[in-house]
Image (cartoon, rainbow, N blue to C red; front, side, top):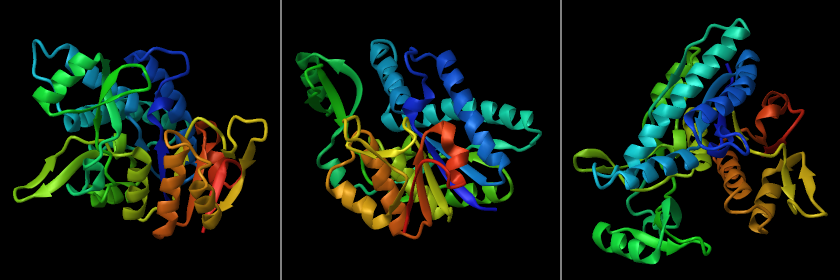
Length: 311
């Protein structure tokens, strides 16, 4: 059975124009599950990873608002919480969608830890905004009392920033591989995984956020998946995105992807990490990376849609 990792963006778990409620997220998850179930029914061994940016932000905001009554949560715990919540919804939706196709398969969420290095350069220069916006006075007080790193965010207010270190290894990789090989659809590495570091007493969580696409590439390599499919908001990668001279890309070589990336064609906050993860996957032994939207997942796996990047 061919193993494929499908990385689903956190923003795609909320339909456009809808407020961030559990009910609205469920509707979006169900739509995404419909397309993933089609890939499962085609006979692939599927591992689903997902983002959690909006969701973990909501957890942290809730914690901040309730801090006068209960202790604030830690970021690693918030990632674990969203892994469980989103995984629950995906499990339910995928099981139902597979059942409609006459397929009886177990779907399971693995609460996944991802090892990072405590000496990663990201810890020296935290850049990932999390949590709510604050006025400068509140932000500086929190920086002083809680040791936060803070930045002014595009004129919208002040926010906490944390490190986004490179993932080194997926702690539960062997379990994930065994599960998918036994026919289980596995949901893993939610939100890039829970960041952990190794110390004298074993693993411990750390205040950081791991990029979901980077973690998905490492996951795909460590479970020896042949392909990494990154699901996003657009059907294909584009040059000059949103401009009159926009060009959709059907197929790219690894060298072409690296060239366009180095030339700055892909924005850091959107397509950049997806292409970067695809490059990392291919440079380290992966066979093919695919970038497309949820509606074209099955066609893209057949080679008939999306942007396909090969060595």
